[in-house]
Image 1 (cartoon, each protein chain N blue to C red):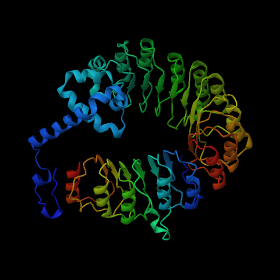
Image 2 (image 1 turned 30 degrees about the horizontal axis):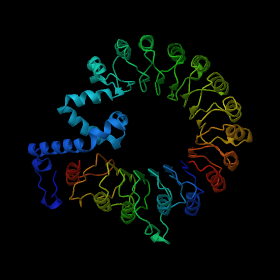
Image 3 (image 1 turned 135 degrees about the horizontal axis):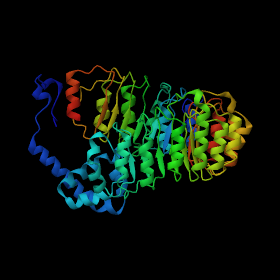
Image 4 (image 1 turned 90 degrees about the vertical axis):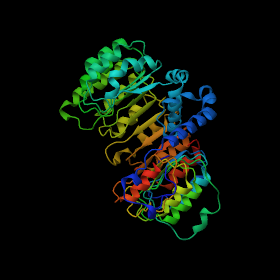
Length: 352
Length: 174
């Protein structure tokens, strides 16, 4: 900490650029941290809002976690309390050999993030499966080169609590993986399979079979993200028809879906709460009254996100007329609507 | 609410809309070429719950009514402000803005080519700032900084020539 540094007093020696750490200063700083923690943290943290402070990646709570780390170094009892409050773990390569100890230490883990692991995922999943006492509800395998089929199968046999699976941006993701997910995790409530967008048109029909298998198997599905997925009108209809609990659908860049297709499909699931949709860049065909009527038939819709669509004020007028309970509205890069439409909508839907 | 690229929107429209969106927590008006920084002040006044504002690449300043920012106080809630790609943004404007939002934690000024040493004053005033993005802001000068920025964690200076003296200051703030 150099407080009196000005450009004129600088010399060129390295030592001045990087002043040596003053240990007494460091100790003092640490003592200040501990003091702050003891003053503000201990009592309120366990009674009011412990969870998000400890495991959240929110930058606003970042400092608090740092304070807690300092404190946990000196108090084993404190450590034993904070261990129980950690619910998520990101497994990286250096974490791998310590997995057993970490699972023993953080006994309440519910969420595993394997996105940054670049070793053998099958082996890793076998090892995780050896801890059936874990109540893992959420697993993230995104950005991996492929789906570890054998590992996932073992995992699903030993850990049956999974309700959320994320397999987004997986380079080699094919229909056999969809069949695997459908077979292994029929209890899923949330599925994210954002595609890398470079799918092979030749395999299109096999993708269709995969999506159909998923929509038949996952009867508890509430939330699904199929962005960039090669999904067409027919498959979308299957999905909406079979997944009766569906509330939240994200389909950005799904360029095979037409206005008539989505209009027809939305009628199938009037309980939808959140719809996010975009087609190929600036598609002109979505400005139809059929599409608008279906949209406003979703009486519980709280979140509407449309991007790169050609919409008209008529859609905004319709939403205003039906007073949909919108709390989130995204019309980024949409065209052909005007101030009159947005004024009408905002004056009626004031929950935003 | 995200109305990115709604190029029909102007400042007058924002004034009229602002009475309906009092509970808004997030707004993105990037690419709305016909609004200016006066919309920023209007939103800050009308939407007390706003945590995050994105206004990248909006229209340049209008000279008339330049003291519209004077008639309201400090907005303590705003945490993130994205004003990148606004090449008209001057030192003076950013200092005014920082006096209204003294508690923000994230400030993104990428590609704001008119900002130079005003940034030091912003850093001096906004002591809670954690994340500052100055990438592609070629004129920014950090040399006047002879004070400590206690909370800064991320400083993005990419695509900018950084000399040893500036780096030294960087070291002292991190």
